[in-house]
Length: 135
Image 1 (cartoon, helix red, strand yellow):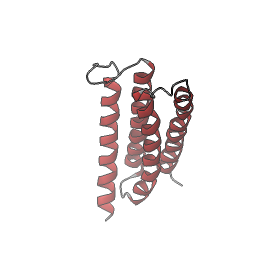
Image 2 (tube, helix red, strand yellow):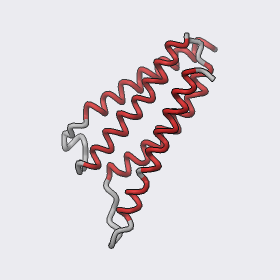
Image 3 (cartoon, helix red, strand yellow):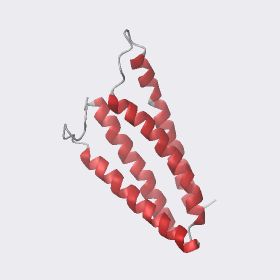
């Protein structure tokens, strides 16, 4: 098992676990009298982290196919895992601070979203180049 595999597996499992743990406050809030709707960004953080964790775990196969040197694959894996952390942090902070719409509210978490988008894009591009080189 390569270092890239380990980064993706550990990162994916941690992200998946975080998303799962966010389900507990979600259930606790929904069980209150009158079944109030769950805060938007709690839902987003919960579902997003679970999806992100699954995505990162799936990228183990892309990393194994890649024909790039280990350093590039490690960089790509690290960027993708970091992207998940940035996005989960953004959504969690939005939930905890009561943001309704991060764009309309001009939330202070926008830099985290941008960092997540950029790191995910660069990481995926590296994997795409490596996988296309292998074909």
